[in-house]
Length: 74
Image (cartoon, rainbow, N blue to C red):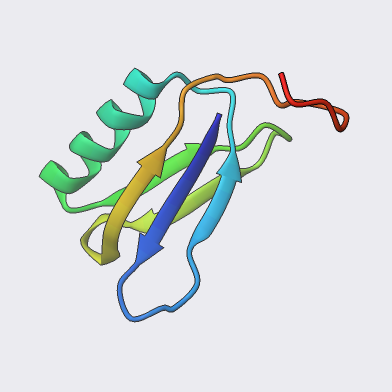
């Protein structure tokens, strides 16, 4: 799924593809904000994104929808 992270004082958002479930992302964010630590999100290529929880302006994530390929309008 795709996760967009808006960071305070930065005009561009971070866009990450992850294999984590929406519940896992929400839990990780809630825990990071409660502890005042880092929000850690693994990407789908084996890396990790680390963002200070107190600098996160917003987080937007989509469900696991398949990407469409081609030019048809189904």
